[in-house]
Image 1 (cartoon, helix red, strand yellow):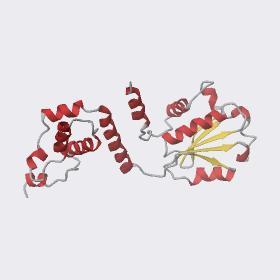
Image 2 (cartoon, helix red, strand yellow; image 1 turned 90 degrees about the vertical axis):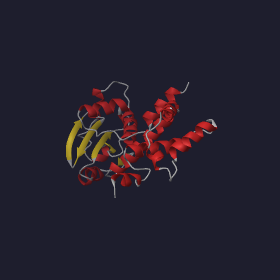
Image 3 (cartoon, helix red, strand yellow; image 1 turned 120 degrees about the vertical axis):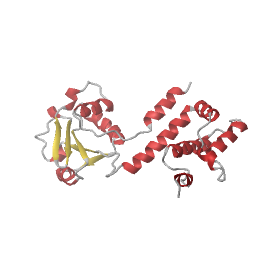
Image 4 (cartoon, one colour; image 1 turned 120 degrees about the horizontal axis):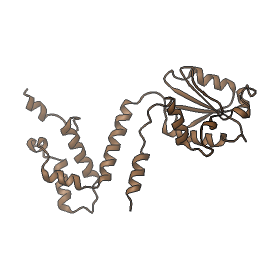
Length: 234
């Protein structure tokens, strides 16, 4: 079988350059606004669905007319396509458990268990707090946000009294963040709010932890693209 024959038998969604172009053409056809003129929709249809008996058209180079059409189409559609591709790629490459929320630990035993028995590749961040202590409630809110942004990180919180070692965690050292991985203490931040502004947010806590290289690469999030799209609305 010749090289040309093998190339002709490749599926339309092959992951080479031609496959990417054809995937984009089909995605654009599916998402095209019905208000687009009929002539333009027909051209998109021809671009995305080359006839089975016309292999040269399927494998042809993109024409100047097609290139101009794609360039002039709504840029937000391209963003959605790119986001979809990145999400699919991440799903194929991601591994390990996902948490996506902050876990409340009810006792010192639960505290020890989450440190000792969690998967060795899972980063565990524990917030030790006490009701009524300045900064603790705000830190809880920040971790709720970060748990959604970093679903592979296990964020936990526990009341200082519930740890069974309340004398070690007096109000002077709260809120405290402890960071573990494979049972090893990587970060011990007592009275962490002393390192933050009086009014702080999730991005401030994220930045602080990143200064110590403790957080993994952020999971792909649709928020960034959504914010970009919102900014384009006039």
